[in-house]
Length: 376
Image (cartoon, rainbow, N blue to C red):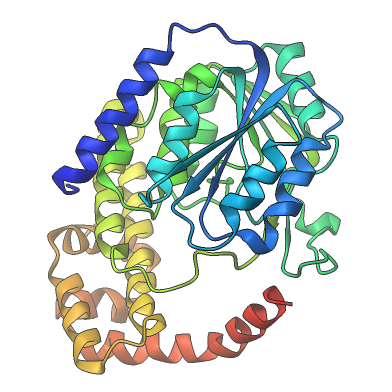
């Protein structure tokens, strides 16, 4: 559970949501952009939104206590375009920052954009047209990844397009075919970007966010929202451009607690919504947690922690009751090697130190190259 200060802030933000709930909508879409030290890419992000061919929207820029020139960039655009609203607040992290924007939104639909990304000129029109035509709760489009400032390096070939056919999904099929992906590590896009939501769905969701710091924020909100949705559509159009290797690649001290709390959230969801496939879903989340275990150990190397501290963290992870439970699941035993499962059972710190350190070193050159290109 998070500290009392965060929970009080979360309750305060939700109170704003309640007080605003009776106010009438006065535009079609609200676009929320959470911002923290993004001055380098912010103008491109804002420019791509205000130049949309679809014009009936408000843009809510939420500055999360940036220490660079981000706030000045926001205010510059606000003075030029009456559709822009700027919220400046102390640094609270991405969950509360995004939520403050959501709770002030007045549009029928909500769209999110990260401050170092940008959207295609026709994106909003395509998404809104589909939502209105078919009375949809959510519209999901393709996302293109790029890693340099000029978008020269892009994953745009047909082989890298995730959605390859337009499809409407309704009723229980959303639960069984879409939301269930978030219980198996299936690559259905967990991000909040690249999607258009009916606003009331987002505003009435978020109960799981109180239990996590950052890791899985998008996934657990989407899991809740998709389980509530009655009708969604997938489209093949590219609607969003995502900067590969953005601002979330550093050491995260809260990663393991988020992974474990996410596992607990998934267990809660299974008990409420997936009794008909309980064993299969538990297998999925157990595999996800043990994959997160590897990521959490790698995170220690990313943070360049002393060897003794890394070993201490590994022992702590291997001793966690949730990790032990996941390692004893039939799905995990079938998925991972005997050596891997045995090392968890034996709390073999050396095995995991050597294994993850070796994998991290192999990735290091690629990470360095990606970082250099992203800073061009």
